[in-house]
Length: 87
Image (cartoon, rainbow, N blue to C red; front, top):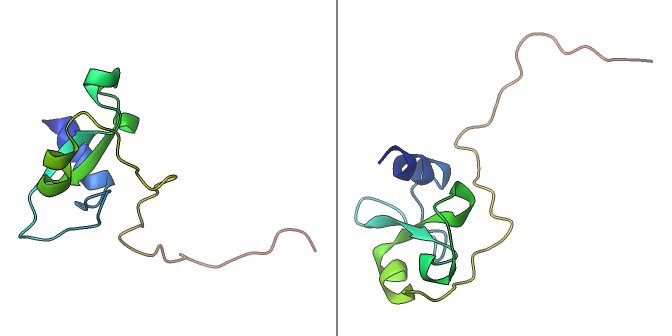
């Protein structure tokens, strides 16, 4: 259960296949490479999928935008003074 939530957090609770998100969207954890095709339960093989995308997928491979890098949920702000190194 903890791994599933970590996958949801990593993917910002957004379907990696169609981009759906929000309160009305049911999300699930999907194996990118299905277990039936030799896929494992490693984090790099798991993705957040809406129930529509996941139920239609079955044991087929779907194209996931790669490399998929989640956008940060906030912009880091610089702290303190900025010093130049070198001349």
